[in-house]
Image 1 (cartoon, rainbow, N blue to C red):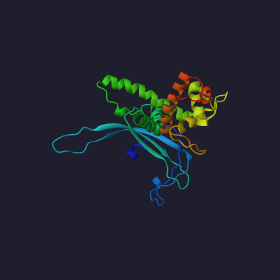
Image 2: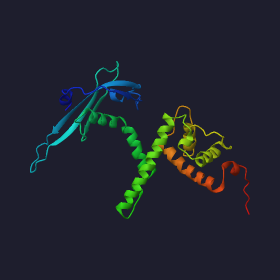
Image 3: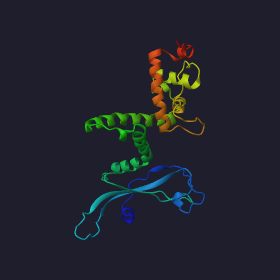
Image 4: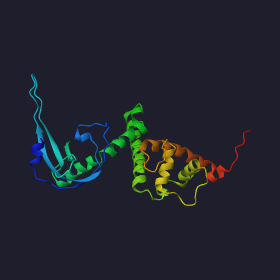
Amino acid sequence: MLDRVRATPCLYTPMLDVSSRKAKMAIVTLKRKSDRPARTAEVEVRASQITLHAPDRTGRTLPSVTLNVVLAEETAPPEGQVPIQWMLITTLPIDSEEEVRLVVDSYCIRWSIEIYFRTLKSGCRIEERQFEFLSRELNALAVYMLVAWRVLLLCRMGRSCPDLDCEVVFESSEWQSVYVIVKKRDPPAVAPRLNEMIRMIASLGGYVPRSHTEPGTQTLWIGLQRMHDFANCYDSFGPPSRLSKTTCVVR
């Protein structure tokens, strides 16, 4: 299969960001599991259609399977580094360069897709919803897909747009109530930055703020649930500044 795809002409040569990797064990013999620094790799992309013939079976005949194969391969890796080689077997069309680019681009965001479905299953617990009718399950899934998307979006925006005004995403009652709970003082006149707000919300879900780490989706989805409760209290009982100066009297 590899020789078949390599025999086809190169369609384009994109630059791919290769993430760093830390070996799980001190002694690793396989190069593909050893330490790897982050770098940018130039790969050649080729595509071909492959037919897999079924083996002989006694008493029955299995049909052949035709699949599309996209190969992204690094031809000139840095010295001492294992070349990048992605063999992508897909049912998506590869008739044009744009369709091949879609296959490669989809694989580049595979980890974000994994995090999205983890948020949908573990955070929204969609697999634990037991409805009597399928239509109700589908309606719930449609809503939870938006929730999981929003959690992932906030997590990514906190990293890619850290200096953005948090009021672009959050209501005044949301960020002000969280600010009072976390900082133990009245909210400022100017809304904090988005990254600062994301960190405060995630701290409500167990995230320990550090300068070299960023919160993940799990601490963020837990913190967003608590933020929702705080915002409801803000809307029901007044601004946090008034709450912080009020003395609770038990009668």
